[in-house]
Image (cartoon, rainbow, N blue to C red; front, side, top):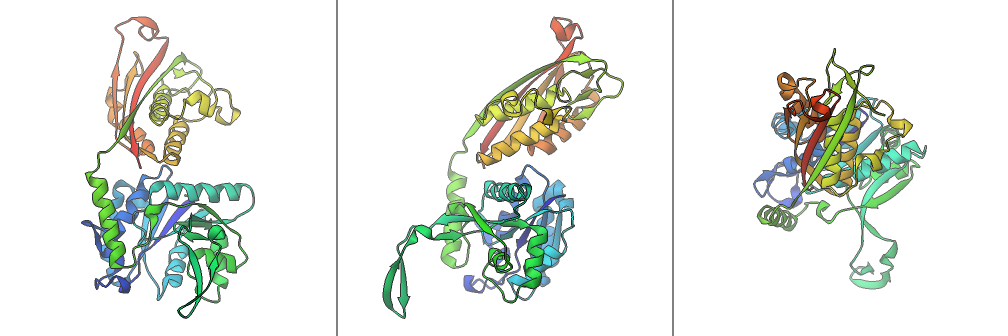
Length: 391
């Protein structure tokens, strides 16, 4: 596990005036914390999710996290918060394994933040680490209002807003550097980027999202509820893509179909592992997003993909969809050929593919009654369709 998100949900919500911990306030019928967590479990790459909760509500929080995470509950942890946000973030960072290289810190009060914003910050941190820079990143929006500097109630001057931005969460950093920054911090800052900068770190910005606003007042809560209601009443626009892949049999290669190994069966030839099913699914996802095809995206001779498992391409397609603001809804794939026989392992194949796609996958198989190259046992074909929607 090399990436994690610390979700800070230990705030009292005094300014909201409802009398309960802010993260446990309903937003249009669903608790704020649940809404904040849902996008995290739609991310294409496995991510450790640590929730920092009020000490008095740990059991309730664990139940809520398990309900939202579902099968991914093993990727979660819940820890008690500290006396203030600074201490709560430190508590969350302390439980992360050292294998984590990139960590995002997110406020549960920004519960409508889309999954694409998390991916944008993760990608920026990963790119900075790969370049040896190790910078921190914050999502930011340009300031649109005219800004004035005042003394008391007297307007002194107009401030040039061209160099100003409004900063949101999640804020992303190399884990080791953020831990060191918190360890040497002499005073609480208003956000994690402030702590990181105070310790000498460089912070850069990536585009933010208007929906990632923070719920602080009753007006903010009403605004969030209005947005949720508008979304639920609006039609859901989906897009459909088609993918087809064919590979010849190769007795010298291991047989891998639909992300499963079939010992004793002839393998499939190809620059990668020849998994026609995974490749068809990848093509269908890319097609649905209008993102090209597997050959043009990953290359048919790129040495980086020599022998690569089919899940590499499917994960890559899902990540590209996320960057385009899209998520998979469902995938259907039909395997065409005499062998390997997939009937007994159909459920296993659906689960393996679904775990990578992040959406239900239906698998079926058929033969061509002895006709064509599949009927003659020369190879295997797969046809997939994918449905995607806006994140």
